[in-house]
Image (cartoon, rainbow, N blue to C red; front, side, top):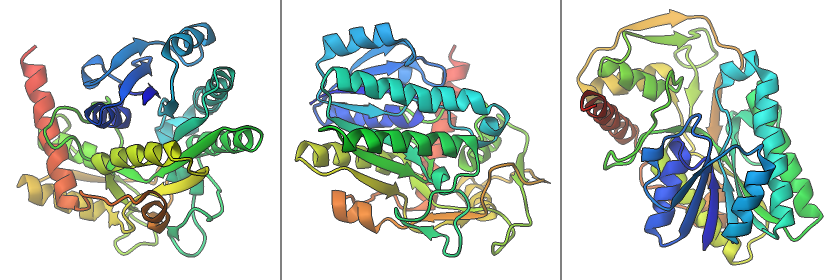
Amino acid sequence: MKLLVTGGAGYIGSHVVRQLGEAGHEVVVYDNLSAGYKWAVLCGELIVGELSDSIKLDQVFTKGRFDAVLHFAARLVVPESVEFPLEYYRNNTCNTLGLLETCKKYGIHQFVFSSTAATYGMPKGDVIVNEETELAPISPYGASKMMSERIIMDFAKASPFRYVILRYFNVAGADPKARIGQATPKATQIIKVATEVVVGKRKSLTIFGTDYPTKDGTCIRDYIHVEDLASAHLAALDYLSKSGKSVVLNCGYGHGYSVREVIETVQRVSKSKILVQEGPRRAGDPAMVIADNKKIQKVLGWKPKYDNLDLIVETALNWEKKLLEKASSR
């Protein structure tokens, strides 16, 4: 298939692009490089541009004649979205609308969308959420993705357009060969931050909130390895190519770890002591969110290969060491 991947130079998108290339697909990456890197695009062609640039997007679609679009491009830091909500709605929701209008114009009927568990907000009752759980985002980031989902769904109801919406839980880890990984400056994801402390990029790690109603007072999250998440996108494309119906799917492992458990794992795997500080809760952080992943396994036949926190941490740590080597060789 010939595919357009928006945001394909970013953390998750670049892993998907690499797997797509290795699977024999023809890939065009469209990215403004605000959170992505040229070196991260290991397969296909990179076009640098803004999703809001409708003229350039037209040129890309005219030339591309794509079979499907995978849409990753978005801003995604929850606390930042609370501070700058309008930027998140403009970048995430408005740009998705513009991209869909372009898909309609050029007859693209297959679409894989990068969504998030943040659309669920603070689940009531059972914290293991399935795709039917009420959407109640508590951050502009989650709301911007929820609005994008609704636009996609409504468009599909009125046209031949079909989609797979993947709601990511907490993505972590890196390419096992340390070719690519998360390189976002000032990242907030706990495993990324903890491994940066280990290699000396940061002096300490802050636990944001120790009074949550969880077993040790810290937030619990369902961590999924980026390679497993990437493979879900390839499975989604295969599903759509076989005339699969539009569907929303959770991407997680079905179990979670607390912030303290993650820190303990990073210390054990790295054989290093991490300086930990305690701070107040961050705006927009629910206490616990865990995926019910039965539907994705049934619909796509998806089977994770990296469901092991030690392995996730090991690949993340190896990537941080690789980044240090890159920096020192400049």
